[in-house]
Length: 271
Image (tube, rainbow, N blue to C red):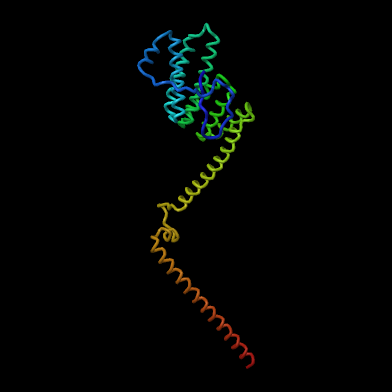
């Protein structure tokens, strides 16, 4: 039976209690020339089955060692061996054995989807999870891995639709519910970032000057070097202070003139 890797990062899904999906306990010995000779023995069916088992176990060994790319390479070859068996009808007279091969083929698609999550190849993950779903349309792992890939690819709208499909088939899947919360946070963060970016763009447009038009005094002042702008600002402040003082003195003069005029008018009346 094909073994499927455990997910060791990110939200977990509840593993399905299938004994035939456990990680192999024994690691195969290194491949050498004797193996090559051995693979040529027997019928094409026997050769393909041996090739499948060798690549399946080598892929699991690489996955456990953290070599995701190598795991994907071996599982791709293992999947190819099984595909050959199915496409060439090598088991057309043995329905039970054919069903087992198709089950292993399905598990290789699941393994590849998980491997591509590790290598962050989201399109390939979606593709192989989709192939697994043609075998089992309600596969919890295939649905979940599709959701993860869509989320990581920032295809949030599609991800939410697939999460709805996952939760419809598996209402108790906690990882799917967590994905919805993660997407909501990422969408909010993306909107905030977009607003800040737009504000910067419009601010830059505001500060830009159309060279076909003359600059206003304010634009001229704002584009001066900082030291000159500071000095001119200080001079402007002094000028404003002088103008205020002069205006106050002028108002005092007018008030005094008004009072003198009133007194003059009153004396003329008495005379």
